[in-house]
Length: 266
Image (cartoon, helix red, strand yellow):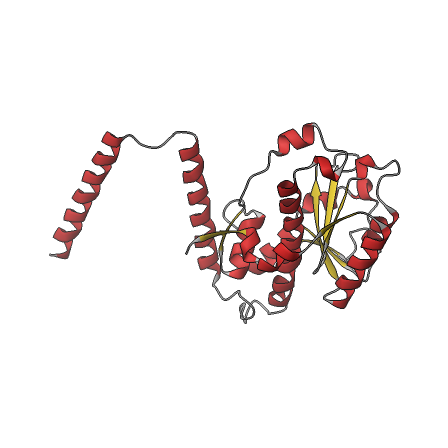
């Protein structure tokens, strides 16, 4: 199966605008979110630590909003705070680590001292539905398994440089980087929609709805295959490709193996 970037898994993304954090834009996003599945995807960028991240992206079904908390004198906008505190709107986080930094966001907690049920960690949900991976499972891999695609990240972003000197305006951030980071929030929303339906199916029935129709061992196999391909790509980028002589030797060894197989067949 050919590899496709995340943006091609969701073709509708190309027509979705990324808006600045302004009251009218929040009203627009909330209206479209409530008219659909009453949910938004959220991507947190920048080390949270004991303070705010430098960029927060919120994606609804028809638009996304980008907010720069550190560039604001009062931190989070009133509209974003209200969204985070709302119990009637699901917030699907790309990275659950942000949820563990409750003090940074002043996130709502439930009566038992845990996080509100309106806050969803996509990683946790994906493990419940798809099973725990044998290795690390990134967002693109979760998307791929959910929708039956060999999804890739596409263009990479130099997060080290961005975190070292965060932009203070959206204009200072490359448009391609901004769109990719917002795309991750959109991916979280769309993936949650499918996994949510699949999670309603009991384990004895198996996953039988949506794009998810694979057994657990097949999912693990895909995870392993993706991890191996990424490792090979990383090795090639580091100049670890074999030499021509080595390749010929490998080919000879493969031929010998083929001969052995022929002997076994006889």
